Image 1 (spheres, chains in turn blue, orange):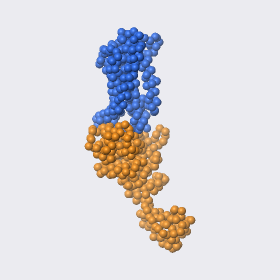
Image 2 (cartoon, chains in turn purple, cyan):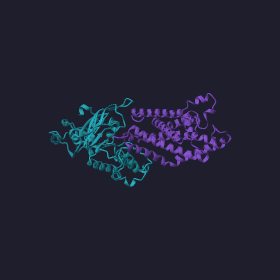
Image 3 (cartoon, chains in turn orange, red):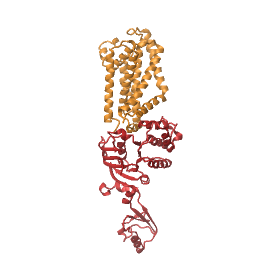
Image 4 (cartoon, chains in turn orange, purple):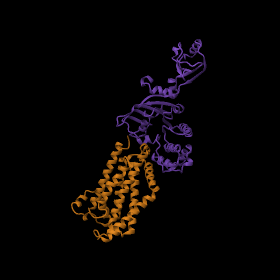
Length: 255
Length: 312
């Protein structure tokens, strides 16, 4: 029997519909947050700062801001998407459906990634209202956007399966992802850090994401693009491996 | 017989060490209504959950129309519809959207005519644009049934279908079950309402503590284990069974106003004429006589409290 495209479509559409029902929050929140960042960092602080690596500070923080939202939104979208059926019990239908684990992942992760990419583009659009922006490598920019959205949606999916309560669902983004992003050079170049913090930062995976993404805008980053791509690729493969294992064993899904 | 579903040597022991199912063998015939009867915690839901792919068995196999339920899960699962015992639905979607979702999830393309028919059969058509949270409890259960029927399953599982539902829904549900059976759908329901099994099922399986104690045609089961009882209302209440009636092993009932005699209706000699003669002989007057057959409930209580070897 061939792939259950209807099943994938059903999950994808269901998840997208969930976002559309709360369209106002989905769009307004990131737009307002981003605007606040621009007012504070771009306007108030940026006006007293030199350029960073030849780039106006307000423009410099755009890739980092987009990444910040992309990471947190991918994780929260995908984790809630799969956690909720577990919580309210509708998971029975997914488990009893002729849907393979890969198809389930495509449906959930695909929808979560779509939402974050749209969100990233909305933030990008908002940013152009505040600062001048040119994108040096538009295709690479889109590729980074997609890869990051997909891999972190997978991470969120794993989190959603792992979580046994709502607090666990929010604790990982709050305690891990947000700090890593702030310390990952969202608002500065890691070159600006004194040693040993510069070296320590290289152990932060988010550095590679932001650096690569920033390269696609300004043609320069903290680390080389190749390393950035490899880092995202490795993260993607790890998440994929964990998901395969989860479905093989039924961990936290089946008793 | 033509088995559409075969369960062989099925066992489930949970990590906690609890054995929910112990070597269950069961063949379900195509087009029949099968009732799985047992007390709470007997393993009914575990059995259904394994067949539907929600719980992983620790032993045995499930075959659906020749398809192994694990290796060939797509073919197996697309034939099955499940109405769960617990109310679980997305509250913010409309009835129509929920049913369409289920159909697609089970691999079928849109078919509005079928969805309309299902919704009308379940009296949900007028509510199709309502969000599920706006519906009453009974209506929500109807939605679960509609979702299970959305992909035109060959086998429908109803897990405790009438637990806590109103009379109207129960009636509608049985009407629907009959209609489905006429179309050739195989129906497996679990229940601890014995009347339900007695009224609806072609065959009954009794399960307790993870073991399938007996599987029989309902009528054969009734005949095999069906006892009748006669209640004799005495003219004068008695403190004890009057002497001289030991042969019939009578019991006092209703504060000594009645005598109960249990007999086997299939036996050559029921013992009724001789008992009545004896009563006359002893001068025991009675006002009324009443006989009734024992319900599936009595049979069930008997089975559950008797070890397997004796019951079978």
